[in-house]
Length: 72
Image (cartoon, rainbow, N blue to C red; front, side, top):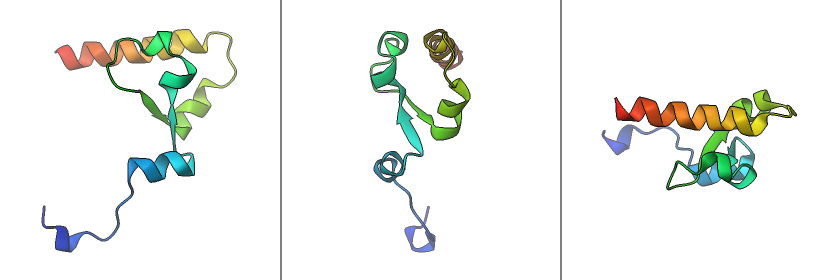
């Protein structure tokens, strides 16, 4: 990619500072243990979790599904 054609960049650091990405590994460490590096969800996905009593289970399902997709 020719960098002279870049119009706009938005880093992960900026997205975290803006609240557009949320570190789920900090909120649900045991459910993200399958990953070596921190897991981030977009703000929208994080808001879909809501205040459900089973948020950890949902996070686990998403993380586990992601590992299964990578293995294929």
